[in-house]
Length: 292
Image (tube, rainbow, N blue to C red; front, side):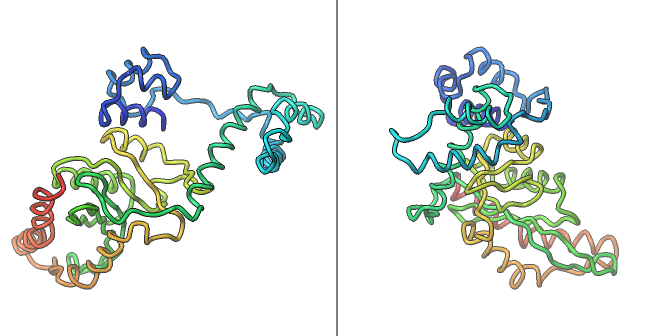
């Protein structure tokens, strides 16, 4: 699923050749061509989640790989040696499975080092069309005479700082997808990447460093719109500080002026129109002029 999203992004947004995508992924050019022509955002098949013979030995193998990574190249044990030692412990699987586990462990380890090192930084300057930031907030409004909690979706462009707010009753996938649809419609296009926190509708599991198991439905949305999702480190809201500031400003400057929807139908329509002009229209004009 994640690989299909990357293939679509390389082919449709970055305009890489089929030959280059095949070289990077190891897939055949016919397979790459089929994915791009089909226009699907997620595979039509599901891989069975069979338990692996290596699962009971995963912690042991991870500890060995971490130990070997700290040694010089000449003193490291090879994967063949590690496989033999696992067999002595009762492992009955193949060497290829051990090698695949080692490759994934190495990729995760490198990602963790890159995200935790002193050289890691978050850019403060963004190019037009490069990125947007997304976040949720909660607030209250009086609707039909009742005090109702609202879930506010904030989408803010990182370059021009134009933003759009959408209010919902829940933070479900449907609400999340609807907020993105309206944002891209108002802003007049889709940006290169989106910056998120580790919300449950987007991330199923937070791994080490920047490793994430992204939710299948969320990944299908990013594949459809062809942009790259990027997730902040846990408890590091400053990595998307622009939209965090937007949440704070909305509470104190914008949503305090939210009209009362308890009046008649005509008054309610007028109130909703006033709210749209006060919040949505300036953001649209700003986006059209500065971030495309």
